[in-house]
Image (cartoon, rainbow, N blue to C red; front, side, top):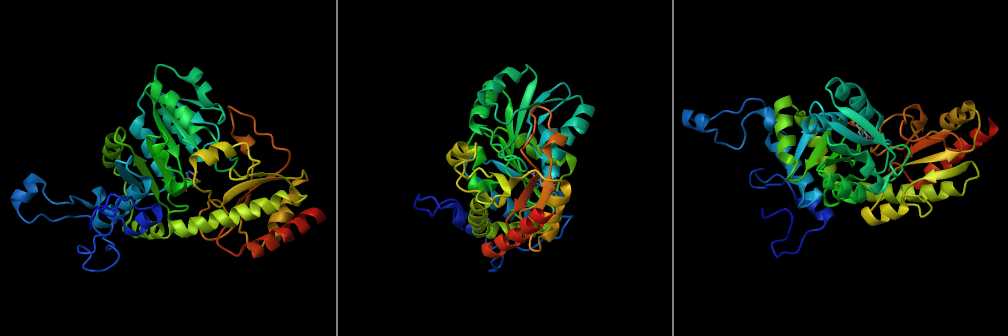
Length: 397
Ligand SMILES: *Cc1c(COP(=O)(O)O)cnc(C)c1O
């Protein structure tokens, strides 16, 4: 097998091809297409000399197996040449906590975007506070004005583009330029776009995390997290994951690996179906606003167009003000959209949300109730008919 990133003629392979070819060593796999699922803790050394010299590719199950290596190589190939390494974690949230524990130490300050995943805020508010790290939240639309929030001890900026409920789109490139001028690291949660639709490490991000539970797994059957880092950040990420004992079970690694192989076709369909339904929803009288950065009308559209090559299946709607009972009637009338937290699987989901409960740097005051939709891989006409059933119940309530 030659390099996973090119054909040998200097012509770079495209992302879809890299997802299929990377991380496969057919000879080592004894001809089989996929790497073995290695269940293993102990690694045996053939001689005492080998033991003393720590020779051999693997040392102990926690530090990696042929299965984890195949996954890491494939995700690295997708992230692009800026990626110096990938660490794996037992959940997306574990990837975030491990990253923060890698980067921060007592006395540090971190700037956190106000639209980040709520449990990420809880890590900052509870765990980091306990460890003597101070957090300041900032408006996702702050841009270069973030400069004023920096302190001499600001070690990192944490972003999510776009936020996975409210979909405001921070200008990651502009914020990263300021952060690097101040000697701070830029950390980002790229779960929504995945590196297929946004190569975060090429846009000023030093450490890009994903809840691989979502699109990489793609089937709502695993908990898994990833941390991709550039050359500047990889040593501290690798060291800390090893020190903390962060690893994941082999069957989950295998399912994440298998998810990567089909990520491009699944995401292309999520993108197409979600945008189609988002446009259809814009024409519904029950819908005041659709929060989806790939829509031309969205305030984040220019940044989306500049930095993203696609959009995922997750977006939100603001609906006409009505009592909660009407929103509940809408949700209960849906038969194809399930109600559940999480997203990124093959199935469609609808969930009410209210960011006002936890925002601190910005005020979240939409014109009506808000519902987040995940558009799965069902037929779009069936999904529209289902939403229509929901709106009938909403109007009747
Ligand atoms: C789900 C999610 C996480 C956490 O991932 P888990 O695997 O559920 O721990 C982190 N960030 C975002 C944006 C998410 O949607």
